Length: 358
Image (spheres, rainbow, N blue to C red):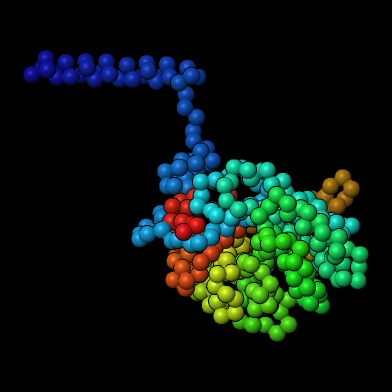
């Protein structure tokens, strides 16, 4: 019995000595050291293990949703993540613009999308209301040249998407006549007009659904930005709101022309913005509110201070689950076409739940 206990004790001593020897060896050998995981590597591991999500996914059941046409907007400066295997029938290449001289500029190169086998449309946009006014008003020597330039630029494309969201209110009729001109000058190519979301008819609307529906081959309803960067927090496109937008569109536009837009992006809002320019008394009140009682001065005597603030951030976004719900809702209303802003921003698992060109 005593010998057995001695053997156990001897074995334990040998084990400890071996362990200590290995530990010292490992500490002294750089090649055997394993760096601690970084936040980026931990995030990448979580995303890889959960199909790109940082949260537990809701299960999606049933069959994929089928549409006649599935459109995707492509921004030429962020094309690294384009999935050419996605079930898309049409790509809208963003975007040609009006330059400061009233000329068509920054025309995307159609060959950049040569790997795509479907239809490709040139997008025309402008975010400068003054330029839009001078381009649309026929009294200036700009509009005819612009229309001819657009028709020429359309040569390698299947159609034109007009995404002019910044139109001065008094230029409503000029905008509508411009759409009619482009329909005539494009010789049978597809003319698509983007319009903001509406749930009812608005008096003197710059984007009158019914009139635009008569002029265009397709009308992309941009059913997103229900909540935006300067609004209170909320969904970019809530389910019920999207349903109301679709119902109104169906009441005034032929359903075969409607393309319901869906967002691939999300938004976040902070409860307080700490950046900005402040009056002296406002700045001092902010210092008090954040516990600042001391300042320092630079070499020129200018006072400065620091404080650490904790803010609350609220975010809303769409993933495969919410997008599939909206797509099924649209399909249930017999809407035949959808579009997405924009390709490369999506939850990749969404594509297995949609089919196009059926």
